[in-house]
Image (tube, rainbow, N blue to C red; front, side, top):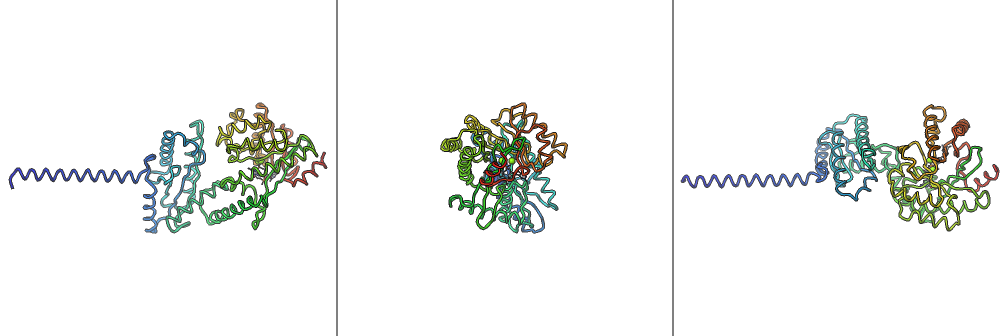
Length: 456
Ligand code: C2E
Ligand code: MG
Ligand code: MG
């Protein structure tokens, strides 16, 4: 072979080699694009599935699989895409730091991450990791660090304790997330009981829908007296009751969250509003013309675009003035969607409807912000009253609430009063309105009427 053709051959070989290398790079790049999420840079779901399948196949490891879903508030910042990208990226980075490299993955949903905790021995390890994740997300995304506040919900299942396959593991972590979110037990781990609750909830939900479709059969209202410092009835809190066919009486702490999650709360809310206004109309004519009813409002209801119109129409059709109604909202509702909710509450106040902050003192609202909120009354949570006045801390909290309330010109109400001593001390501290089993349990309309007559 001549020297020239030898060189030519080498050149061609070299070209082919670099062509091949480029091709390989391109393939690697493509694979990397497929394997990584473009926004967070995290490895994607299918890579985790592959890893978990391998581990399950080896059958040696005990590991935990978890889902981290950013909460409702996160969905509300969808309007700004760039901002969202940055938020997601930083959130992922922070969680990655907590979990260690290689253990956080991107789910197929953009508001969701998946994680993996290898070689776990006890549930304490999972508990610690979950607490760290929740704290990290909450700390970072709550004022003053950011103007948007959101947290996350987490569901975890363990192999081999809770599942035999990746599919089952994913399903059970999802069930754990859903149930814990719904019932607000503050947990995150799957268990057979959680699985049973999930299936029960599904059943209850359809019974609830059927009850609504069947003219709200099984639902009724209980009225718990709200009294002044002398024990005289001023009004009542209307509380929903449900006798579910085949399931007995279900607590509102159980069925209200179910109804909130799947939508029927809007119908139930409208139904109870008309029941209560009809009753107050009669009582104002027969018992006292200043009597009022206090109604609990879920965030879901307050976010309905026609929320103000619906209540205005109801008030007008009963020819009732605004002061016949009070609305109870929780701190979290006010904090979770401040703008939409605030506008609606202001509209209610303009109509003369008073707004009460329910379960006050258990949430995370900043006291300094209180005077900017459209609120008339603070309702001190039962959890605080339970320890009052025995526990000095509860006394301190009650005094702090009273003093803030006074400086902002709010009315204060204490709920869950069961003992004479709580009553006396609360009056001494300057509380205006009282509610609790000491005065009366929630009553039927007939019983309420009888009690009113007997005490006036
Ligand atoms: P809430 O608004 O904080 O209602 C007060 C709860 O405390 C009621 O429970 C009442 O029966 C109970 N309670 C009052 N005084 C005492 C007491 O002295 N001792 C004890 N142990 N309990 C007392 P209930 O009726 O089970 O309602 C639970 C929650 O369900 C309510 O808490 C409210 O958040 C929700 N809820 C009830 N009815 C409705 C409704 O019509 N709409 C909405 N959105 N939520 C409702
Ligand atoms: Mg209430
Ligand atoms: Mg309450």
